Length: 129
Image 1 (cartoon, rainbow, N blue to C red):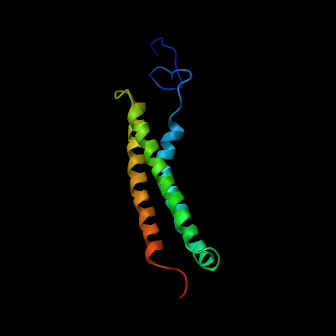
Image 2 (image 1 turned 45 degrees about the vertical axis):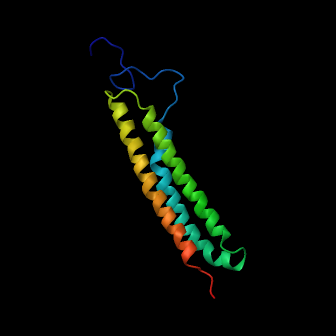
Image 3 (image 1 turned 90 degrees about the horizontal axis):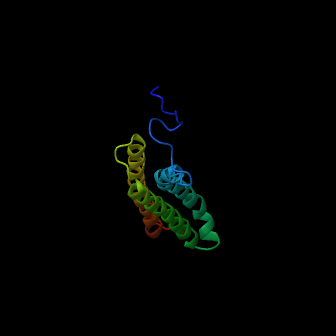
């Protein structure tokens, strides 16, 4: 110990009071796309027969739109987090940069997967003829 006060945040200075904690936003960026797809896929399958009997295909389209919007929101959150990473020398900044890049990649990938699943709703009707 070199006489400097120990902090809970490692060797660097503690975070500025009042500064927003980006960690929930980083995790939202990483997990929004996969969670949106994990909700969309079984929900569309579960609602397919019910939609044919009651309201038509509109319910399936609404579910797909909402899940795609959630994946997009995760991508925009990750992009914003990537732009807010400032100190390239700190280990914490590297971790945040990696999480933001991972959020961009997962949101993009799973956004495309949600779109592909939604495309199947357009092409294949679950309603018996």
